Length: 138
Image 1 (cartoon, one colour):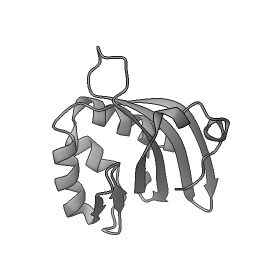
Image 2: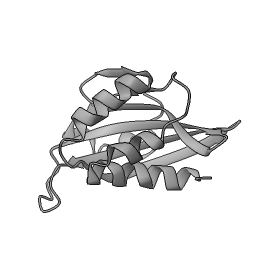
Image 3: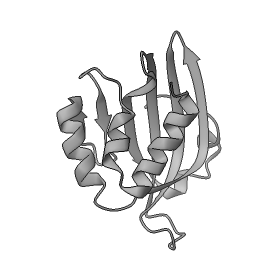
């Protein structure tokens, strides 16, 4: 059974390695899963998730975590982070920045992703004191 930290680490690795099958294995078994991409596209259920992630993973996605907080309540863990997004390992300047909220639930196979919400954030807000702490569920 995977722990929260293992699921999150495996999610980042899957995006970087374009490993669709591993990425999909991290999601909760129910078809109520949702994923909102930085451009606002909403993926509902496993079928849309597979199609959307397959398209997204045509290129490597490298997430560099700038800030992260998490809390667990009644079998649900909320992980909020601000990420610098890059598409090439040798390019150190981010293409853009996102806020990401991952909601994980504990099931028969351990912790799994139930919902993921990302939204772009302006570069000039990254160093703002309000971003430095918990930006909360968005």
